[in-house]
Image (tube, rainbow, N blue to C red; front, side, top):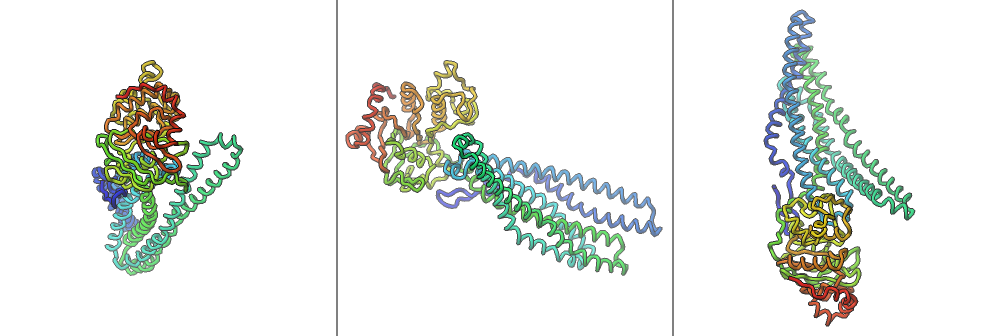
Amino acid sequence: MMEERSGPGQQKRVRIVSFLRGETGLLAFLTVTGLVYNVGMTAGPYFEGQLAGCLADILGGARQASDMMRLAGLYAAVILVVQGSRAGKRFFVRRFANHVNRRMRAALYHALVHQEATRVQAEGTGALMTKAVTDVDLCTEGIRKFTTELFDTGVVMVAYLGMLVWYDARLALLACVFLPLAYLWAARWKRRVAEAGSAARESEGALAAATMDRIGNEELYRVNGVEARRNKLYETELAAYERASIRSGVLENAMLPLYRIVSLAGVVPIFWIGGGYVLAGRWDIAAFTAFFSCFLRFAVKSSHAAKLFNAVQKAQVSWQRIRPLLADAQDEDVRQTASQPVHIEARNLSIERGGKTLLANVSFSLTPGELFAVTGPVACGKSSLGAALAGELVYGGSVTADGRELSAMMAGERRGLVTMLHHAPELVHATLAENVALGKDVDVDAYLRLAELAPDIGSGALAPDTEVFADGRPLSGGQQARLAFARTLAHAGAVVVLDDPFASVDAETERRMFANLRAWQGKRIVVLLSSRLWMFPYCDRVLYLADGTGVCGTHEELLAACAGYCGLYGAQAKGAERHAGIVLS
């Protein structure tokens, strides 16, 4: 990939040319067929002039009808070769554009899958997907049009202009003087066309988000009696999209006839001066017809070039919008592996959400192989702390991994370093085994055993090829939680953040899963966010969060020095007694 870094912690700048590599064969065929077709287009005006001259000679008795038949046959043969080259050019340019579109879509989907939750939540899944996919299509359509017009407009205009100059350089200059006016007009309008196109894409994304919201929450709105209000809001989004789309279409398409009118103004000097050439005997009918026909084609192609400016401008706007996403996809090659233990140091960590301070001045350190438990009262900020470590929330203060600030890392590197299991299981519509592997070559059976799903498979209740839907069916809540747990361990980085991973399983299964986690952990740092404190005596250290700050120490130290933790643990003492005698390897 051609790319450049703009500074520490900033995204790579990905270039569009990187998606064009590997297409040299197609581009070679495209170049050959494009040159044959577009240079051959000059045969049309030439033969039309010759046919007109031959007809005049036949009417004057100087030539025979057989001469016209031979000339027409030669014209048909040349046109057949030219049009065959045109078909080849169209095939190759379409295939070239499809290959580029496929590459860009693959990179885009990869980036969207790994997109940080904060952006997805802020923009909305529907809006983000619609804008991104539409922008990829617009971008590749701009590439296709540019590639096409490079030959169909650029090469053929050079050929037509050469033919006009060959007939008469002075008249060619006078006839073509109007063409730059069309270009200037197109350049003046291109910004408005681009702004209208961008507004239409934004409105389309908002409509998609409103549609998904309307479908997903239909029953909720009906039960609460706000369905009519939501319908009205949806109609508002629909009307806004219609207005933006119409304005974009008008600006993009209504200009083409005006461009052509300006370009075709050159016929006036052709009739005035060229007609004088015929009357003076300097030109015959064949020369005048060939020059006039060539100019008409040249003027029409020039209007296409003006329209091309608008298409390229729209493609540039789309490229600027999707480039950050595609740069995220390129970051995946720097993902850090779990075999590289790290030290984590948090100093004066603070987190705000919705304008409210959740945590302030929280400090702790984590060493390789440490099991670090985090707890506190309801809404104390433990899930937000985990999300900040995983790069899903902006934080204040400093959190470093071996001296490097987490927020300064590229997104792909940070995701490879910290793996987080959220409280709600996140499953995909695939088999049980595929939900664990996610396309990677991992020992699925081993991770199913770590998550205590092996007994369910052994009993016949489940199988590795059991189909699982995104909503978790047909698994129970506990099975869903264990499946997400298995997947997290299978793709773990050097730091693993687990948000209440045992909340949906029974006490005995919880005990075994915790023992499995300890045996599996190795040199990884495990941050366990939980309100179930029975396992905390078996953790290396505990962070107790309350009133926007935190106290860190061993379980025994917090029992002695922190009244809040002591009270919380005491309330669960009976639950802790049930797990007495746990054996950890």
